[in-house]
Length: 215
Figure 1 (cartoon, rainbow, N blue to C red):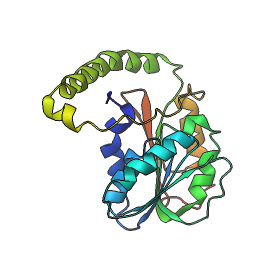
Figure 2 (figure 1 turned 30 degrees about the horizontal axis):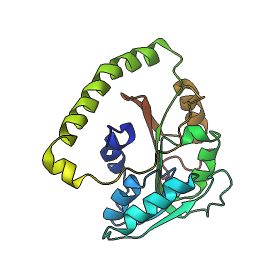
Figure 3 (figure 1 turned 45 degrees about the horizontal axis):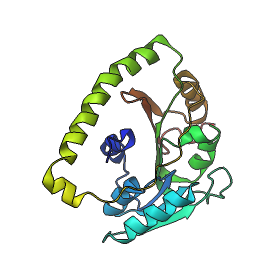
Figure 4 (figure 1 turned 135 degrees about the vertical axis):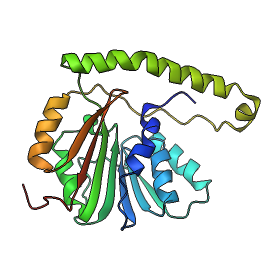
């Protein structure tokens, strides 16, 4: 399998799991790998994606595993889906928010429990010198990671155990800059934390227990 930028940051997102609570929503779940990791940690997961082929493959793969908690895979458009309020202890969006209006974040927030956590691993449109500088730095590092993954895949043991390739998730160019995302989060997700990551991503973390009454 090729080097995946989203998978690279899974551990970073898992550090934000709340200590209490056991229900999660994974928006734009893609191949279901992150949903599986949530289930392995005891979370019952609702995993949604707009791509039916991706959902079918993710459901089949997860069904072949012995996971300690259930994953419910559903083909759905998050902008049309009715989300129950005060339901999820953890909501994740991995490289999916730029496919939908930014205002979708507010609906996700309403679905968090009182101490729920929203994590967004997002893509942003490069507009500043800092954006382009980080992007330039990421290119050689990305190439090194890809080479390392390729080398590992050539090992006999790995080639015997490599799972079948799942369908690729839909891709789209981000339309919103990092500055716009920070401005929006400041107004709609008070006390959220945003930081730029290396591989053309940012991480947003919102903990509903902090400043939840601010609108």
